[in-house]
Length: 287
Image (cartoon, rainbow, N blue to C red; front, side, top):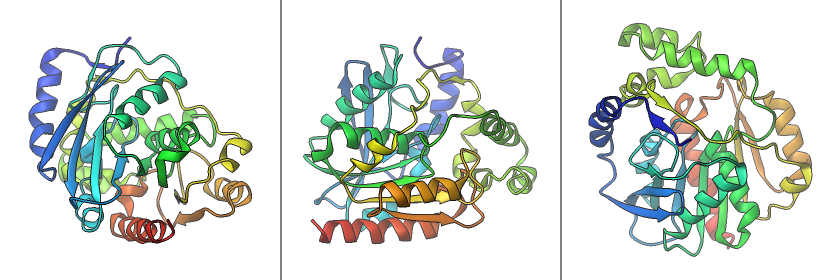
């Protein structure tokens, strides 16, 4: 089955909120694929190697709203509404395997008319970026991974974190902000994103779970890579993941963001943006 909203009215309520939230992007383009139509939202510099932003599960281009200005000063920025996620993309064919999910992403990235790109992904988007780097290494100029999936099975504890955040997102603003600390989810303090949370409760995501990376797969990735992991990540023990990465990808930058959980992009947006711009500049000069 395809991902979808529970009713057409639920989708319209979401879109009525989502379309105005896309204001940071001056233009958008549709990209046909064998699985439906993805949408690329463009901002930033007019020339250069683009930075392509991949959201996490249940996310979309707006998840990156705090990063468009800092990244766009020196780079073209493209944030994707991916097929199977809640956004402007339209799905026409189910994604039933991890291989199909990457086939769909590949077709989407092929439609950007960019021979090389920097990929930045959060959570599931980080997993997808790494999988794409394995499939098409010549296309990837660099990788920025924010608490990426693929370093352990999805656990009941992680699902509890997701559900707790979703329920807290239904609370009035003041309470929602207070709940961000106990829930270890700074997204609850981001009013731009939180405005979408109630309407997203009506979305049913049907995309394969991320397959766990082997040491051999990680070691074979040649693109410059930076991993920013949440100290209290709900997805896996950050210290163990960092140690593994430092062992199998010794050239990669690996940093644990103190205090963060799986909410790295919203917990410390200024710090993360600074790390990303520094990494992008160093990767560019190293080419």
